[in-house]
Length: 360
Ligand code: ATP
Ligand code: MG
Image 1: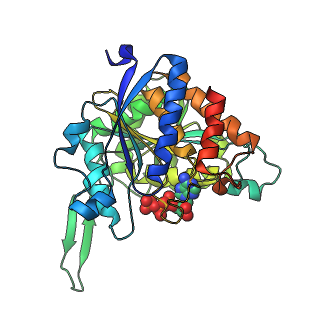
Image 2 (image 1 turned 30 degrees about the horizontal axis):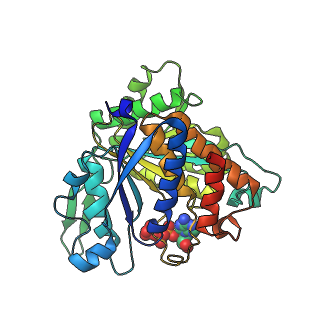
Image 3 (image 1 turned 90 degrees about the vertical axis):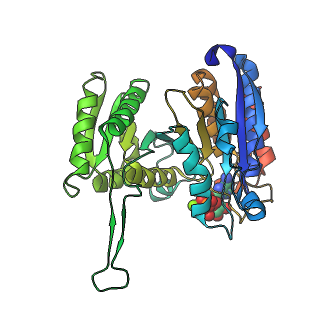
């Protein structure tokens, strides 16, 4: 019924700082592209933020998760502010949402757009468009980020800290399946990040499970690469990748690295997905609340807009999602209305209008 209705209820969590400035551009784009595809959106706004934490002592109300459980998707700006420790927004908001709604895939597409002065361009001046178009599929629910372990013998000479990584057959299987399936809709290639030469229990298990899932996708080519060599290759030869599947920690590092390679963090989008669509998935730009530019109207809205595009694809409207990406690509290529992080002088509104013009 959800796909057929073509009317979606979206929970908006603008959050803090520039999070509040980039969400209105994203909903404006959703409305514009929705009109072309017979899709409408009803938005419910939630003031969950560090500002709320400072005033009321919690990022969200006690029944917060129940209030958004039946929405079709969640669009988040950014949470984080000076004076509020990062672990508060993480453990009181982002992690509860990811866990409660089984968002076990963290999706981070990375494209080098013509017109964006990325760091590699500077190093290779002749390289006008590297053809970089890759997706990092990060396992979002288990692995290295576990609470198993502890500190022992505090303050003694024999003090030690122990942290267990937890990988399950079910957890590795489902992230591998997602990556292989995604590759069938892209260029048909998966790179699996490993470190089985140094990490002798969990990584060989990861490799084994990935290899067994690969058998179900005979049309997809895949290879396994050690994370150290893989990271170097993301810098030296990013266009050789299609889909990269990685554990929680490795995927976290790789997706920031690859986003930096692509240019501005202001463009990078992400999705925290529950692929079965049993629960709402959450879409958010990769950037944070950026207190240094907040309130000035100069934030780049493209990361939030692209995240909204990922949301359209996830809801079953990939053509609409592709249109959003094409509008971003055209706007950046034209080079006229770019924000400061992209080397221009335009404000958030001006760049948003330029994208909207391409969609109307
Ligand atoms: P958080 O802890 O919330 O992740 P952070 O300080 O680690 O925040 P960002 O808030 O992403 O990281 O900011 C990093 C730098 O990038 C800042 O200088 C910021 O101004 C810049 N920046 C981030 N997002 C944007 C954007 N959308 N447009 C322009 N500049 C941005
Ligand atoms: Mg940060």
